[in-house]
Amino acid sequence: MARVIVTGGAGFLGSHLVEELLARSHAVVAIDDLFRGRQKHLDDCKGSPDFHFLKGNCADAKILQQAVELIDGVDVIFHLAAVNGTRWFHEKADMVIDVNVNTTLAALELATEHACRLVFASSPEALGLVEDQPMATAHDSLFEDAALHQRHSYGASKYIGEVLVQHAVRTKDLDCRIVRPFNAYGARCPGNEYGQVISMFMDSAASGRPISLHGDGSQTRSFTWVGDITEGFLLAGFTDRSLDDNSRLEGAVWNMGSTEETSIADLAASIVEISGKNVTIEHSKGYPGDSKRRCPDISDATRQLGWQPWTNLEQGLVRTWHAIDARING
Ligand SMILES: NC(=O)c1ccc[n+]([C@@H]2O[C@H](COP(=O)([O-])OP(=O)(O)OC[C@H]3O[C@@H](n4cnc5c(N)ncnc54)[C@H](O)[C@@H]3O)[C@@H](O)[C@H]2O)c1
Image (cartoon, rainbow, N blue to C red; front, side):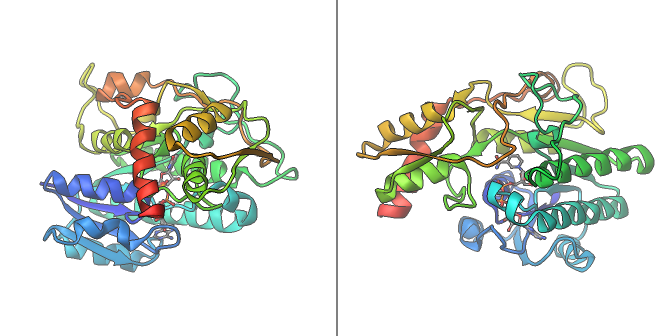
């Protein structure tokens, strides 16, 4: 049994990870300021004696210290707290950078103090508008001129997070690993205008509103089932050495995403079909700085961790639809 802290633990990915950690008998403290996460996401964890929740800002060293005291030490930190959601990247670029960088600094400080492992939730957006696809794990980042738009507030903050993590590996001998999830989806992903595309489309369909498709819908994404991403975080946190050659994993970076590339227009059509509802699709202006394609090269995650996207899009969409339809229509 390990003692684990999950920052952003009431969020979409964080709450699924906390549930799975408890199911595997670890002691867990979830920290979240509930900016976007919800305490009800953790309702199923409440009965467990190994579960603790702290509401607060995890850039604050005091709350991190409280977390350590609750479980009498810490073996692994999963650092997921961040401001996520495309609309924020434009509207509150300053907040996105502040939170994403300062929470990462604080999490690294804690890991240094306790000489424990840390898994950082980065993003493919750390690479910006890379044209080579599938996206390799090691690639130069490409960001557009900040005078055009501030979309890259998020990607740049994740890039800086990766720099900080790699710096800690080199200078403090810390065992840190980096996971880049590609468009995770599933229950609890926010479906409002600050949410993510599958939940937004499904919320619209379930509420009888038109689906609003940005641009012509030809941009593609690799949608990845939340359960597969959760398993990826667990492998990243608990695999001691690389499966293929037994090498150390400090500083390793893993792209984790489906290799099934889907256009947003096809996604909208599939959701209309799965919902069985008479929903119209409208076209609206997209956000500037959106990448045209995002498809991962997952060979490192497969080779070193044995990770793969086990769930195909149709299976995942049907499960997600049942969860969202039940939440909205009872
Ligand atoms: N969902 C994806 O497809 C995806 C893709 C790439 C990267 N990521 C990264 O994975 C992580 C989790 O993403 P998610 O989709 O679950 O997003 P989310 O917004 O649901 O989760 C982030 C959580 O962090 C919390 N938080 C924000 N600022 C905080 C602070 N200062 N102190 C404490 N808690 C704070 C939020 O309330 C939220 O619950 C994030 O770091 C995100 O950038 C997610």
